Image 1 (cartoon, rainbow, N blue to C red):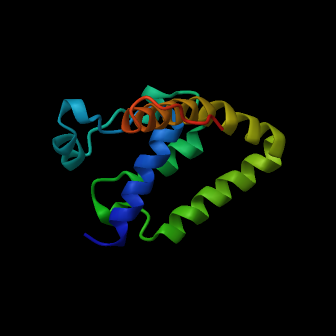
Image 2 (tube, rainbow, N blue to C red; image 1 turned 45 degrees about the vertical axis):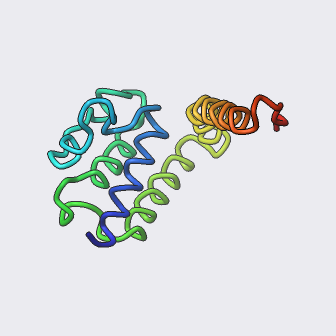
Image 3 (cartoon, rainbow, N blue to C red; image 1 turned 180 degrees about the horizontal axis):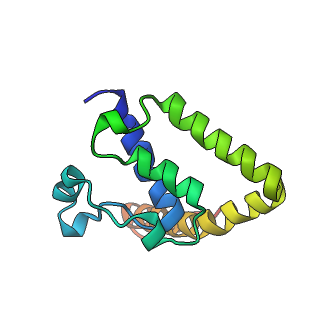
Length: 130
């Protein structure tokens, strides 16, 4: 376990943000899938994700640490480079709208779960909605 483990974890978060699902679902033996590096590639699970971004996530999720980005900085630089290229080709507004479209439903679901947990913890007392 070293810094490349964090790169893999960041790849899992990116996968979740882009596809709405975990790369290794807990209900189907995620640890075994993780060790084997078996997950549905983004081009299968979310074909609308641009190829360059799918490639970055795939590299971050490599089973062999030597094949991953070696540092979080390398991952960041790859993402920044991809974003800069997209910005030149498509404009900031379109990229922001795309991210909002993909992330907003996940955030709403997450916020609803948090509210439910607080309500359960507080014994049904209402929780302010932000």
